[in-house]
Image (tube, rainbow, N blue to C red; front, side, top):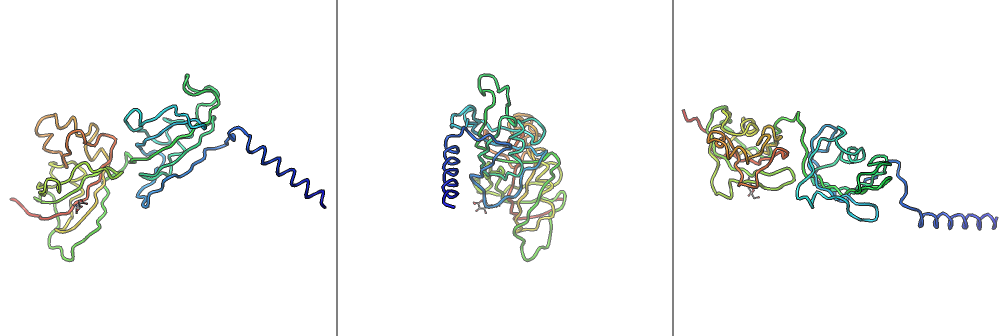
Length: 271
Ligand SMILES: *[C@@H]1O[C@H](CO)[C@@H](O)[C@H](O)[C@H]1NC(C)=O
């Protein structure tokens, strides 16, 4: 009996010793540590989504081999379409906007036996610290979330109505790119006749005076493929379609879905 206990002790000491001295545990699959989880997750990444994220790529000893922050631009890519190493394709699925993950990827789901140039040696385990900024899907339409409805509504916005409204335009991670409040006047425009970006033309329809909505749109219904930069340098007709028109340089680009918090102040027919 005593012998048996001793042996078990001996064994457990051996195991502990082995664990402390082992090289980085060879992983069968990726490991995900969620280092920041936002309170709300409006949407989690699915295969086929287009995402924008920042990352630091490190070896297990912490040495950095690549970083989107150093390049000063996010990494933008479709998920699950083999545009990424397998481990990242798996690691991004289920992520929420503003969520942060530390992802550990075994060599066979990264650069394998070959490695990558002189940057990644053969058989390297890679760690990525990932921060997701936004996600959308080419199939997305305009999403409307009404969060305040006035008690009475005598009139709802229809196509070709003239409306006055306040808005805050943000990217999905919350970055504000434009607001009518900073100009201290409402945005006044016709609705539904192509004066506005398509997402706003659709999203304003049916609103009552005093109603508040969040209108979320993919880039294709927002500022389009080129963001605001190109359009505003184009002819005047194009520029007049822009809404909300962001300050130069802060314009959303092709890869940024947009979100607009709107409050309608007035609805009228002009003719
Ligand atoms: C925009 O944001 C400001 C500041 O948070 C807020 O006071 C205002 O009500 C918002 N406007 C809309 C239309 O959501």
